[in-house]
Amino acid sequence: MIAMLGRRSLELLVFCFAVYAFAFTPLGERSAWQHLLAVVQSPEARHAKEEAEQAARRLKRELLDDEDTVPSQGSPTLPDFGPPGGRSLN
Image (tube, rainbow, N blue to C red; front, side, top):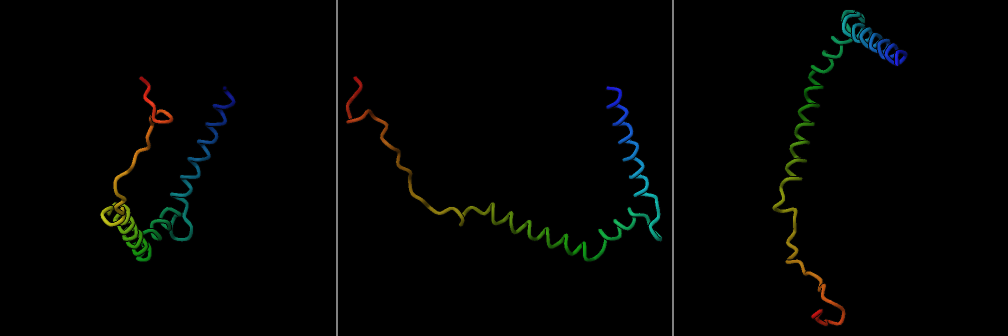
């Protein structure tokens, strides 16, 4: 139990150090976090986001527009569940 607590504490410490390094250690003029923000906010990323949103709207429209997609099949017929030979149980 104590060994597991120590192991989890060490893992948390390593994770916190990695987050700190990602956010504050400079890689050239910017940190890794600042580089990530620059990539995500680029015009190409915005264009990709707009295209993905358009594709999602088209897919939603195709999936939810059930007027043309469900063909008329008529009324269902139910099987006869009577006793064999058509005899009555009375």
